[in-house]
Amino acid sequence: MGSQLLGPGGGRVHPRQRHARADHRHHHARGAAGGDFSLALLNNGTVRAWGGNTSGQQGNGTFLTGDVPVQVLGVRRAKDVAAGSRHSLALLEDGAVRAWGRNSSGELGNGTATLSNVPVEVVGIRRAKDVAAGGRHSLALLENGTVRARGSNSLDRLGNGTAADSAVPVQVAGIPGCRGHGEPLPSPPPAAGTTTTGGPSPVR
View 1: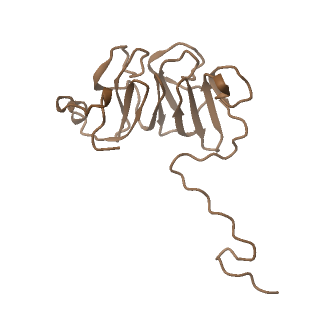
View 2 (view 1 turned 60 degrees about the vertical axis):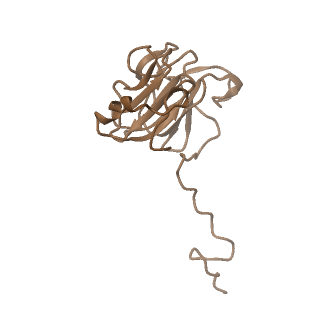
View 3 (view 1 turned 180 degrees about the horizontal axis):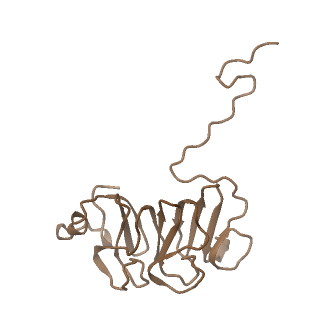
């Protein structure tokens, strides 16, 4: 990502908008692009949002569209963000997940189908290490390598062997040891006839 985030429509954030970051004296650490809005995770663990907000995807307690970044309410110690079509996710340092925005298919994972313009806790997720958001569904990778999904199950996107939507996280079947993005692949096993140091096996 470049040194400047892009605002709605792909334009650069105008200089008059810089107070949204300068007031906090923090630069963005990473960002995410949703269907019609954007997120920025700052290096102090808070989150900013701008753009479309008809479903509350900015998480600031309103439904007002904005071309200036606003702070997402109640999110502290975030370490990652993800954006769906009109919903947002924040992964916290303790492994919990917060979600806000559209929830017509249960993509927020709080047991309801009611949208929220403020972050809500995703139920049953305590040890997540990665998150991802689709158009109307969400994923969380847990520390044990399993994956939890919630939201729309059209085209079987929850991966749990059913066709039903779920407003709470369900386990994706057959994923026993998934790794998060950026994690290194494990070293391959040594080839037959070699020792763990790479030399030939002794002749006996």
